[in-house]
Length: 383
Image (tube, rainbow, N blue to C red; front, side):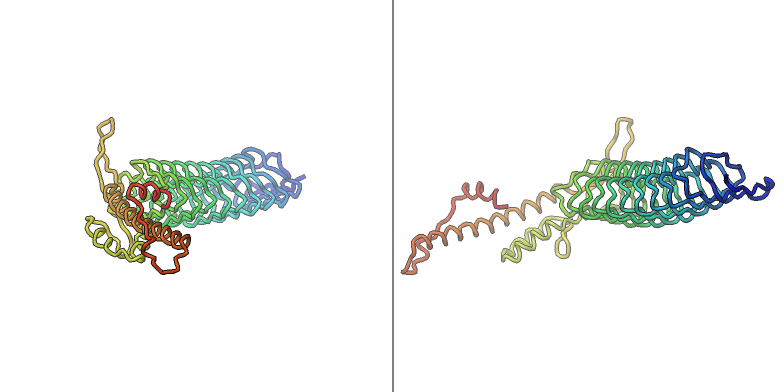
């Protein structure tokens, strides 16, 4: 039997050998789980507002849905490594919960598991967790630090919505997608690092992240959804590592009123290669494209346009100036073709010399120029 020190309702109740599936006094303040407990049933301690401390046993495997929901006096919890699942809303509304330790071995964190834990300041997600489900940390308004380990695959809808103190986040390479509204309203989020390998940002994922100033889109991202950065009105610069791979929905940067620049490192690398090959006349031609910078980094300006939806509401969309991007890319491609065609002709020339075994040194007699139309066809395969 559990040892219970049941005092007057105005005092404390201690359960120091809780074996599960038994009535729990409403004014319990301390619970120690017996080693035999392997799971906690649905809403076992829900609404026990005086519960301050819980010691979970090492043999525990699952914390059920809403187990500690609304335990507003609970201050800390250490989830044993044997626990593989935390059910939905398990710690939701634990407004004084400041310290949570999640250990390797945990596989599933249910939706809203730590929602509205407004005193929680930091959390580290183990590598064994594959998905942060929807609303998991929603409205953890003092959450400042989130560490996500490699191994995570997905960040669910509204997982970190209204985490107003969150200042930075690193998205591991293993993550396939960030779903809708995942970081909506994270108004102090200043830095987002997407690791190479990350694939997709769904619509409205970073809506109203009003402190975000710069983002870098890695080469592995294939799609950025509509309104993904809606209302990020401090966003000034977007770096696109591989602009040919990523697809932007037309309103990805809706109401991003400060967005002015798109940096394209891959184009700058191609331009540098052309200049190093000796074709320096390209420099003046790039200079003649208005508002394009390239001396330090290749920057294409952003343009804004007004859109009116079917309800007559007007809004602003910022996007890369596609005309100038096409001009720069066309110019670089032209010079790359020139360089490639020269190399191709030299290769043919050398092949003819080798075949002729010319002992008289009359090398120019073997020179060959490839006709223009043939070059165009061949060079498509040399790029």
